[in-house]
Length: 260
Image 1 (tube, rainbow, N blue to C red):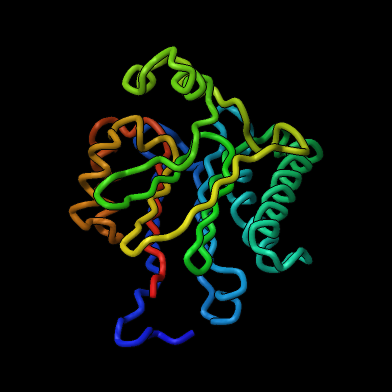
Image 2 (image 1 turned 90 degrees about the horizontal axis):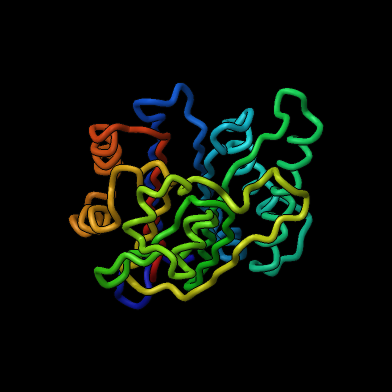
């Protein structure tokens, strides 16, 4: 792919990721991964894939579940024997990942009943696609507004969508961590799927739920608007959450897609 279009420079995809166990948990059960193909043909055909996962607290081997989920998704999407049509290929890779986690949870003694969330962003050309299960989040910063693209699949998230409580009440609700869906609980798992068109200047913000124990969406929006999405800046965001208690694992990924 040419790095110019007429006289306008091509902005290359920039991805930053940071993960931290926080101040309370003994282990980090979060995991993140991505693949931005250097081969132009692969990038043109399949795009770039970014994913975050959070091992479900209280289940066994959460750190295994999260790392397996991200790595198997990347492996299935780029190397699986699936259709070449991107949206369908993405959905198939996601479903096979969910099945893989379920099989491990059912058959491996050390991983018995393990579960995790999985939120994945695929960027190809001027389109993006999202597959999502759980309460990790994907946001889009566009035109100064921070828009949550995923739905929290939690009891409290459903209560907010039904109008029973507001978003501020949801932040401290005792059932805010109770998941409605997670990988590992069933072999066939319905995932939320979204798609949209990219615009120049778009920035994606992916995060596990631990960060939102201590930071508001408005604080994150202000942080991103200040241009602090580079690695050191992301570290500062997590350090701020840790200074306020760091009650959970936290993972943050920012993706500034290629745009020509």
